[in-house]
Image (cartoon, rainbow, N blue to C red; front, top):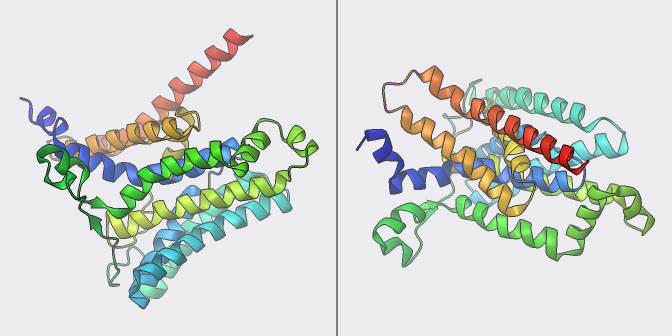
Length: 306
């Protein structure tokens, strides 16, 4: 069998795909929640960066994984709150405000990396903690299945569980009902007493929470350090993943998984004699193609309904 095909149809490929999907799935859930409320949060790139940096620095200076988790999440939620304040209170355009926050996050993390680690590129000089990997009892003993699904980082399992939490939140709670109502018709929702501004803020804060987990995984699960702009467009890829999944729980998961597979394929191609420039462009080309197909299908459906 071809070496590449042999690698793809292996337990290691599935294991790697789940690892790579994690930092896309977290922000994709955040994007989906805000999209359902009628406000798309494209600041996930910046939220992930700030949380990734905060987690590394807090863990390095306190030696506490819990404090790193708490402060990392607070940093992400704080960024989302700032976006909500600009958009909902100051009436700034949410897209422009989000772009500004992304640029701010990129710059401030480089500056603070130099302050704390005396390096503008990475915090490798700091001794950061990492989130542990977890072996699942019983499943771990099953020959092939164990190699696929056991031994992953704990945040990967949290990401998978988050899909269920997302479903329950949106379809089984009063807040989820309000989020969907505000997204579909804010005027109608307001007419029955729903505080539209508050609901939109809640959805942005939730997106900050999930985005923060994605950032923390990147710097304390995927690797064990923070590096400049380490999100590498994952926040934007998450928007594509949520969009092609219709902002629905299962759809968002499969959309994220699609990009996880593509990224993993690029990693496996790196072991072959394929130009690195070609490998690096694969995830981004796939994003553009998937969004183009999605836009065409949506346009066709809209035309059919008319």
